[in-house]
Amino acid sequence: MQHALTFVIATLCILAICYRLYGVFFVRKVLNADDSEITPSHILEDGKDYVPTKKWVNFGSHFAAIAAAGPLVGPVLAAQYGYLPSFLWLLIGCVVGGAVHDTVVLFASMKHRGKSLSEVAKAELGPVAGWCTGLAMLFIITITMAGLSMVVVHALERNPWGTFAVFMTIPVAICVGLWERYTGSMRGATWVGIIVIFACVVIGPYIQESSFGEWLSLRASTVSLVLPFYAFFATALPVWMLLTPRGYLSSFMKIGVFGALVIGVVFINPEIQFPAVTQFIHGNGPVLAGPVWPFISITIACGAISGFHAFIGSGTTPKQIDKWNDILPVAFGAMLAECVVGVMALIAATALHPADYFAINSSPEVFAGLGMSVVNLPQLSESIGLDLYGRTGGAVTLAVGMADIFTRIPWFSHLASYFFQFVVMFEAVFILTAVDSGTRVARYLLQDFLGDIWAPLKRTNWMPGAIGCSIVACVLWGYLLNSGDINSVWALFGVSNQLMASIGLMIGATIILRMSEKRWYVLTCLVPLSYLYVTVNYAAYWMVKNVYFNSAAKGFNIFNGTISIVMVALGLVIMVASVQRWFVLWRARGNSEPIELLS
Image 1 (cartoon, rainbow, N blue to C red):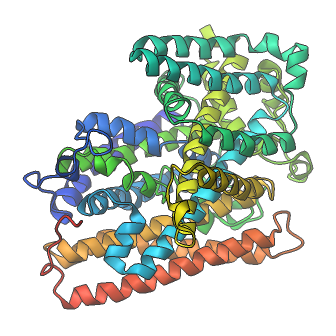
Image 2: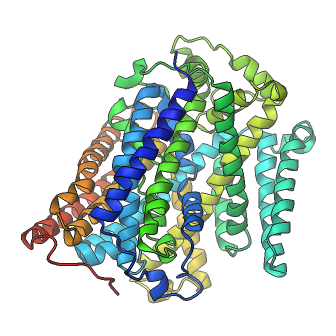
Image 3: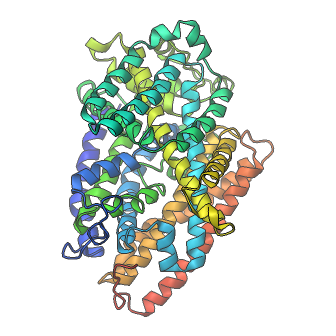
């Protein structure tokens, strides 16, 4: 039987070596980052968007933006296949794929004065590829909102304690935002906000037993309808009132929760109760229907490689990099740190008994057909004070696993329910912060696309256009949220997300061919691209054939299947444009066309 500490030490050592060797090589040799060259943050400094920022401050903000719910949930769901496939994919995918992707996308955006990936694609690959990239970004942000929201649904259904704690973060964040807005001081508001959030978790049991608690005991279908409505109003509020202060407060929870989990793993060193591989590696699993390949690589996106990171790497971060070599800790380093988060989530899930894990992550009917008997779940349900059976989505499993580890410390043995609800709140707040940001980005993308048809929509401050596009964005991902189960929706998210990562690597390969001293350096992007592009297209084909267009499947949904086909078609167009561009650059000897900061 393996122990958790072995995985933690191995992860930290491997990632430290890869950072020092491969990370330095990639940034200094492949990308030829030169601190004597002025960065966009200095060239276009405006005190608002383009602001030179110290590298470790940049690291913190970039890491907080990319490490949302994905690295928490993906490894938990993929634990169905055993600990070994997930652990290997997290390490290999992160170093070879994710860290390279995040670094080269950030570098490419900086070379184009901090512009978005669609604008970079338009400049590097042509207008058709640029338009397809922008449309793909709209698809992925919409699908991401549905996938992440589904994780919240089963964590909050019939859970008045958790629902109350999560709901209270909204007025707390608004008060913190107003405090900072009108006093200019954030320190006092931060302490008050953190104390109130903890207090909401502490008084949860009293809420749960009250008539108000009965009113907050919501069904899954109700939570699924409430979330899009919430997202609309959250998007309509100014960012300083809710989005920014809640993200700021949640960053303290992120650091605290995973710091505590690392300490707990070190001192408790729990056994990994899962086998290296399970009988479900060939498919037909109760959590994920598909086989270990390609589904391990689309289920675990964040933590290994994620196209969603391209929104951050070509968004705020490139406008704040002070020196070119700062991209090593900010992009490469932050991705490795997110891999650590993914490994810790995997440990929390696989430290549970497999039967308990499957009882949580599958419906009672499906679990009954597995022929397994739960071991510790009845005691865990009693100590937590909540029925844990059939709460799919990954969030509950992670909360149970972390609570189980924490309560093995003698001082905390009677606090299982508090640990569980705090982790649920921690996950939900992170997801809702991402939903706020993502819906706002989807609104901007819709206005940009529809603005080509009707010019007033291009103005993001035009209220009718902003409200109309916000409603459309919420309806789109709200429909996806209510159209399937976690199996089908998370797979749809994984396909779109990893296709976006493929597009980022295509653009990265183009940049490297244009500027690197040695053309073989392009393999740093082409190797992960080759694997990821084949994987994501096969996964899309498998889901369309076996689930979305299969009327006998639980996730049967023509709309989801059509989206998958459109996404694959967009990726194909961008791939063809990329290959054509690569041939041109190869004939031009690759390094004969040095890249400059483009306007």
